[in-house]
Image 1: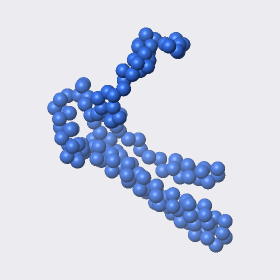
Image 2: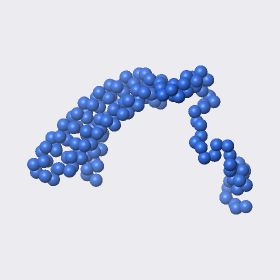
Image 3: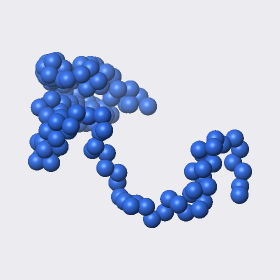
Image 4: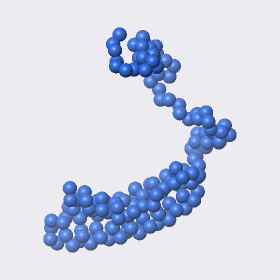
Amino acid sequence: MAQFGWETYIERQIREAMENGEFTNLHGEGHPLDLEENLFEDQEKWTAHHLLKSNGFTLPWISRRNEILAAIEQAKVPLHRAHALFLERKDFRESDRYAGAMWLRAQDNYRERVAQINKEIDDYNLMAPFAGVRMNLLNPDREIRRLAESQAS
């Protein structure tokens, strides 16, 4: 039996059981764990959540959060495209003005869209059941700055 340093009694018991093959061919081996059951959750709430989920529904605040997250990603697309075009064409004299103007317009559009999304986040935070699932407001300049810094590197 190999020595593994300062192992606890429980660690030694587990290691020895593994060496003896006591953890092979267990029921459910190779299948994902079913983590749906929470022993501490109210049974009525669990039943309601389970019925919703198994029928393709979810709680309104969860749906709203998913919609907002999708809107955030969609809002970034034109900004990233304009930035890529700006980087691609900035070496050409005539295209430089066009790409630069498009990049500035995309920044303005992104700021406007983020302002709308931030209103949606405020509304969502009012319906969110607890602080742990609330969303922070977006800072559009942070994303713009991140893109500009990626250009420098």
